[in-house]
Amino acid sequence: MTIDLKDTEVKTMSRRMRRKQFLVESARAALGLSLLPLLTQAQGNQKSAEPKNGAPSETLIADFERLISKLMEEAIVPGLSIALIKDAKLFWRRGFGVKDSASKEPVDNDTVFEAASVSKTVFAYAVMKLCEKGVIGLDTPLTKYSPKPFLEGDPRIELITARHVLSHTSGFQNWRSDKEPLKIHFTPGERHMYSGEGYSYLQSVVTHMTGQPIEPYLKANLLVPFGMAASGYAWNDTFEKLMARPHDQKGKPFDNNKPTATHIARYAAAGELRTTPTDYAKFLIEVIDPKTSDAFRLNKESRKEMLRPQVKVADSTSWALGWQIQHTEKRDLIMHGGDNKGFHAFVAASVERKYGFVIMTNGENGTQVINKLILGDAMQRLLVG
Image (cartoon, rainbow, N blue to C red; front, side):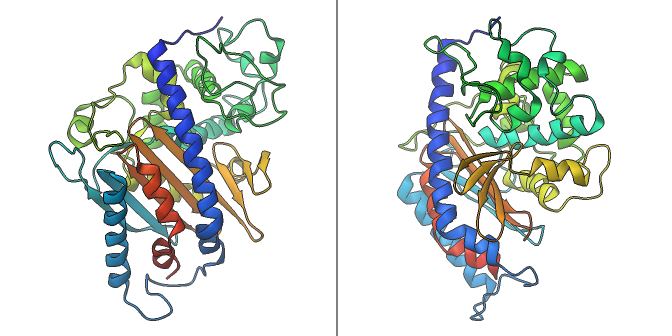
């Protein structure tokens, strides 16, 4: 049995994947050129945003703010919100531009964006906690838990586990379509292939095993315990008020996607989280500098396994469980890109050095701004200083 998608959904997800791949590849290159030296060489005992030459942090911040505004204007990106993490604390945050180019309402720290594929990191964490509790097994075939086969006619479905899904080694393509029905392209675990379908499959298993729809489960077991009050999946009055509006390449706004329960049941884990950089930074800090393990937070062993490279993608990159890993000679960087129509996001952090950032935009040209910020040295000076 397979699940059919409307043609419009297929086209949308196809566009998302192409743009997401562009974002990930471009940002990977950028990180390799500039931000990785920052996150791997910075000293953890530095106290403020004051660089070695003695320039005040206010000057650095002012320069960074001017740079962001300039890049947004050049790229025609209406709005951007950013949060910087230093020494495992929220160090600096700010919104730029407008939520809606028509209303001119400004972006602030409470403005909500679509996290797109960055949603996968949150879902992966929740899955790891379920594995820790013994609700599902990380290496147990998902067919043992699923009431209906996700795919019929291929015995390799019996091999796919949560580990395969979270590391993108399930063998499924990103999204099925009329031209490319769902299929397993290789023996699970054999190699890497980015797959939203895998996350959708695992989400269906989680909802079956917990007996709850995905949104209330994730809200009760991760978003609320981590203090992410502005985050969620289903459209609500808060999103109606605070949500940024997506814009095309020319800066023209179009309507927000207001997902139905059916849409959330299909795509939530893979790309439907709505959040703010400040809210997401709370989650990222828990990943890089966790509090004591409890009913919601991972223990040391589970966290270590989540962040351990599982499959090599290129000489300098691997996939862990829910995270892409950029390798350097000294240490690693975790990261993930997100890309829905009209929204682009990127997050990265050093687990060892406790630095990181979250950037979210509401324009189709958001990748241009994100990549130039990563390539430049203004953010480096702020985080290193």
